[in-house]
Image 1 (cartoon, rainbow, N blue to C red):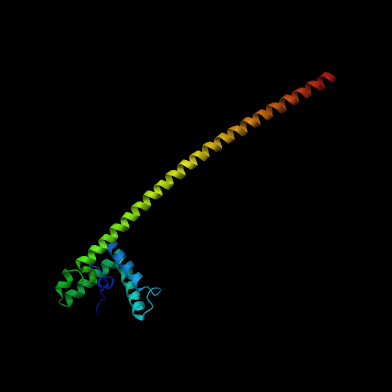
Image 2 (cartoon, rainbow, N blue to C red):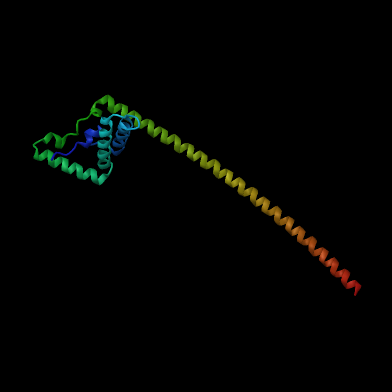
Amino acid sequence: MTLKDYYAIIQVRADADPVVITAAYRALAAKYHPDRNPSPEATRMMQELNEAYEVLSDERAREAYDRKRRLEAHFNGNRAAELSPASSSLGDLAARERLERALRRIREIQERALEQIRQVQERSNIQVRDIQERAAQQINEVRERAAQQILEIQQRALEQIRAIQETL
């Protein structure tokens, strides 16, 4: 039985980094997703993409697949397949450059998003500190008012006790 060429299905080289595999899978999944492409060919392609990505995105499964692939190539006498990456439409330079540009844009977007998150966190930390300071001031004001009221109550109580003692 011949193994499916998952690298060709996802259109990446056999030595592709996991990030490249994921980016290629997402691009093809967007193209062949049944919500965007109702053709039966798209449905079949989407199933193959999912199957290939399931194996290639899992490090252990990918290693096992690569071993089987090398063994099959060896037993079929195809030494070139053992040594060279799978041929693919992304193998051409222009497509690879587009993918690298897309990956750079993704990284830039991620970096900007992280910076925005840091800024929001810093602003929220400042707001929390301000709220804590105001709360502490309000607590002190309440304590002072309560202490003042207690003193007033104690003074009235003393006055009433003195008045009662004087009547005795």
